[in-house]
Length: 267
Image (tube, rainbow, N blue to C red; front, side):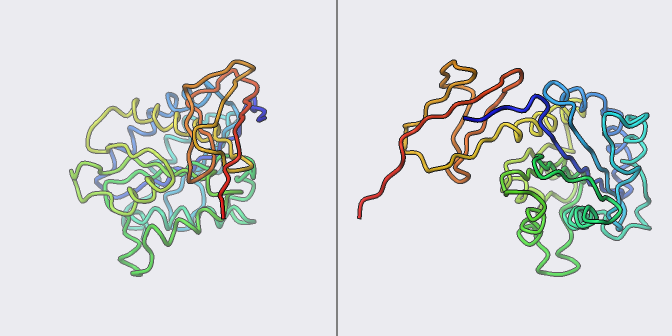
């Protein structure tokens, strides 16, 4: 039996490429902040956002919360801060995220992470992840375990991106692999409406809060689910790799009850 938080905690970090070709996109991201928050707040007011663009990994304008004065204006400024010539890692955003998370442990981003929260990392870039150009070992599968160290379990980390999925610039190698590995959303920077992009990112943030890890491995086909006492066979899926159930929408629900037979093996 799983109790559903009325306001599930969600921690989000936007890592935003500041190279010259990104100016219009970053402005559009800022202009759609209100729509992003509106999507989040269909299910929770308990969110925190950090925006990182500089090599230090420090959040621009600190930790943004619902109670932050002029939070929309600060976000709009934060996503366009910095010039390409003064930032070394503006096209190595997994590296930048790793540095930002390191700074949550007593550094300039202290107090951001919450152990019970989903951590949603969002990259915005029209280039591939370029850490490997600095060191051949710094590929996506090097950074991913480092990023996962900051959450209670690997299934609490989701990476999404608004990136070059269509080859309109130089592709999104590195980001796409990390996004797929964590079950995030890969959205096209080449086309599409930014209001639709932020709605999709908000939806992914909420879906991650409706993920319930089972105590044992269920026998195939034996899972039954009740939401607030009502049996349902739709709106959820079992992830064998995570041994967890994910739900599409639990807004307004109080309790999920999962029953299953134990999987057994014969010697």
